Image (cartoon, rainbow, N blue to C red; front, side, top):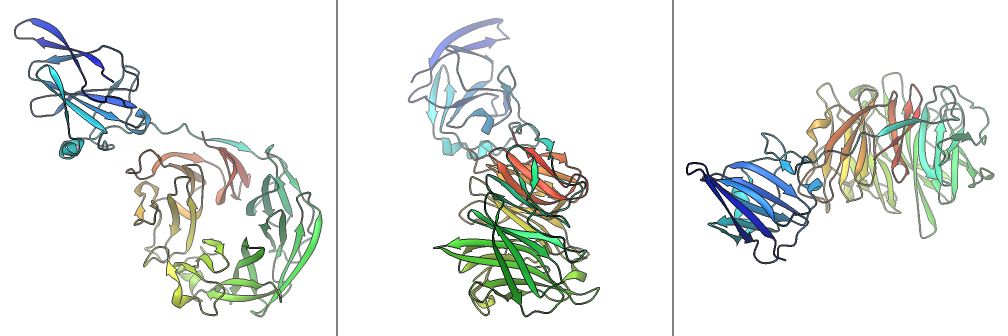
Length: 468
């Protein structure tokens, strides 16, 4: 394709002007085009950007200036911000442009193609403003929940989300945005009881987590909310064990069920356990345990950490005041073969999500007085972890994503949205908006193609956040 371009050379000193038409040589097909006016030192005097080119395109050049054209197979909204007049600007801070697909430089009255790779030193001399973020997400309430609920867990199930409500029951959040109580649990036996549960295919299991029994009793329900099974489990860890969360996976018809449990030794000391259920005997066995000073070192910020079942012999596990490990939960001692998710890192809290592009995000809170919260990211396949510096206020409690947009729980009653531009793998995820939610966020779970459940405690307990 040959695009005719009118170049008007304005000779101010002579008081005259002239126009000459010159094409872009060779294959000039692209998604977007950037036109730079340069001085004799290749400094940028003007910049225009187009996706649809007028033919001919009039470009005015003063004496001593020249023209450079960069063509990309990327849309403008993946490259830079452009106004309605197709004008763009260079900035002191912003993004670097990636190498173009094709480049041309005006030589006399003709455009000549050059090697894009040769532009690397020049591209490193300036920044452009990044394209605008998507609009801020919208927040809407959820009907049907009790007043000021504390949401203890949330998981996709039965075309909606299964929720646990502290001291109440399990609820089903339907696609209409309303929640209904399932009424499958009797009253709690302990005032500190919370509802925990997990999803196993079309079934869900919920129960009270308390210290009234040595074990955990779960009620199995079908998609209609009918009780179809009662699952009694036990353990040999002592009477002070409280189950905090469950994670399950089914592989070749066999279920793997893990639990995070807390053993309060006294008012200052607690031990966190990762337990695995022996399905044959319905007995919990400790796979991993934290040190007994985790509660003190983490200033009480425990019981919220990564817990994922990836296969019968692989789980991703975080412990308070410990690393996040990939380990085999079937082994009597999984530590010798365990591998850290982040080498050398120790966390109190942690949560992880994987975006549609395969980018991983990890939010965390470090132990000790000098420990700091933050968010790390890495691109597949398992490149080095890098920080997202603008998220220093992250709480480490929760993170979730839908497509290439994520929501990160902050240390106050807010969330931050993070965008990964799949078209720009050279760019790290960027922080777009901070949104007031009005609750302490502990759960971020996909609800539909554009919406996340943001849940926890205080205020409304849970809201739906729609990502544009």
